[in-house]
Image (cartoon, rainbow over all chains, first blue to last red; front, side, top):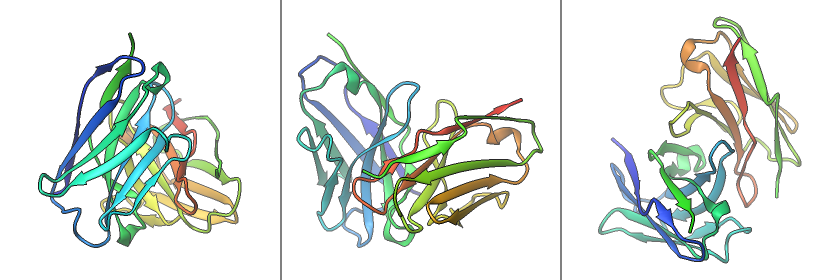
Length: 121
Length: 107
């Protein structure tokens, strides 16, 4: 059974760096054809794709945020970490991590519950 | 970036009615398009991938189709649990993008 869960601060100040951890079970990010990604959703707004980490260490970022984002994995802990620098109030959103696999073209078939991050001084 | 335009923004229907949701891509995405359902307070759920393939466990009342850059999600007969927001997503070209969503509400 595949599960994912996001963790991190619920409140960050403007200009600070956000670090979110996705802890997963039921799969390994060393298995060929697996990926873990991040998606966010501002309150009442649409989904926005942020970043993706493939099993082979290939990484992809949203170009509009690439200079601020870093995605890493810790296979020993079954975790994927997303860092976002220079946080701004417009970054207030629920942040989701999700699982994708090659057999369904890396669409996200399992999602975490999401974690709401508020950016405010 | 590829822009996905969903219409209508809101669809007001009654249980048992047929729902037809549209997603138009600003350029070709071939069949690299998925549909997600998001109920209030929940994470999105994958419904359809590759334009017309139902994800595991998705009821047959959900179906997807494509004509060029126009994609359609059809719910043949709305159940109470189907009233939610639906998003399309393309993975043809980086960056992957989502549409703005269609809310299916109870009339």
